[in-house]
Image (cartoon, rainbow, N blue to C red; front, side):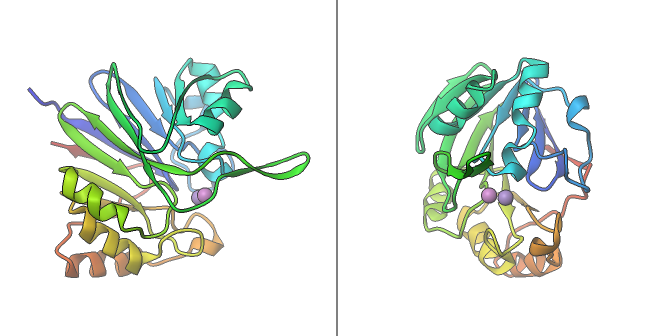
Length: 232
Ligand code: NI
Ligand code: MN
């Protein structure tokens, strides 16, 4: 019997997915995010998915992993970078999938960059990815930071996506019009926008996305930070 998944929006691109088997935290950026719904010190989880090494996705991952014992799943170089700081990690490669005790994770293509700003300047750390997460008979697609890409058409064709989480903030990722086209290609039962209004460069009216995606027949929910959706 398929059981419900609860997905809580903690702000920016950070979500906490609760299944009967695990709590999966995606892209924890809570410290330094004025809009965050939780403090990094208070989050409990078993798994942390990190889409790329930019601070607004990777920010609190290592600290939370070390405090909770959660395992970080990320692309190879990001996983090694986190592992070198003492986190438990599982490296994967873009396109690769794996069955874990809680469900399946596949890394998907994201057109973006991945870097850290270290003592010796900005250093590239691996490649950015998105995630296809399958658990309890449900499928969630988390796009990460990405441009609109034709790969999304394939993802939509080959998966019955229950929930698609898409960046809409423009400047660093897809803007609302491109994201609506992504939603059209993905054909998810529900699409939720992310990665907007956290700071000045990604200020956007999410209703532009809601309207445009609606024209494509897509159901969108703008999740207030701190709110939860149940996937049934
Ligand atoms: Ni980024
Ligand atoms: Mn970002």
